[in-house]
Length: 159
Image 1 (cartoon, rainbow, N blue to C red):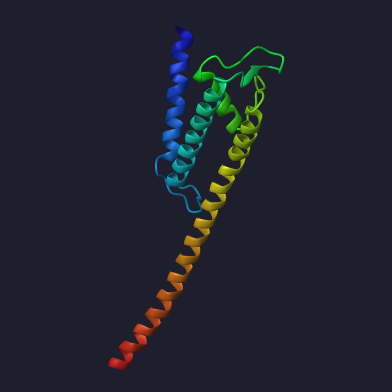
Image 2: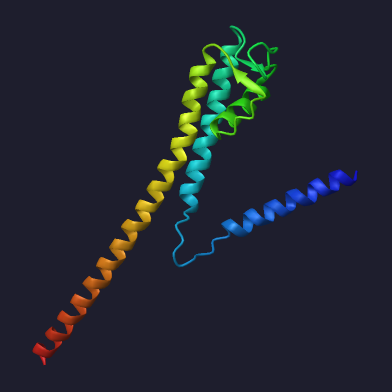
């Protein structure tokens, strides 16, 4: 009972921290874009589920993951085991409690590469977009000065 209450309070604490982080506060030099983060999150979620389905379908033909070592017993008893393995592989955690065997090794390698490269590509894109918007803002400021200067000259000519 006590552990359930503590777990509930911990979850509320984590949710409050996530809310605070995403609450729309803008900082002067912040590179965080919630839309880009959401795209990354849902892309990785979709890839995790997609690979879990792939592992599950492959398990119909035989073992896909085994416990601990290749000599261990079959580790995939249901879809949730494959979803867990897929998430651990994509996030490059690699606990080692489930080991891919056979054809699944190749797909696990591809999934781990995607899990490593996809966030990198998103961060590079976010930094590039921030830099582009900074350049456009600088151009607009310079153009504003030029147009203001021209407007003043035009007004003087009109008088």
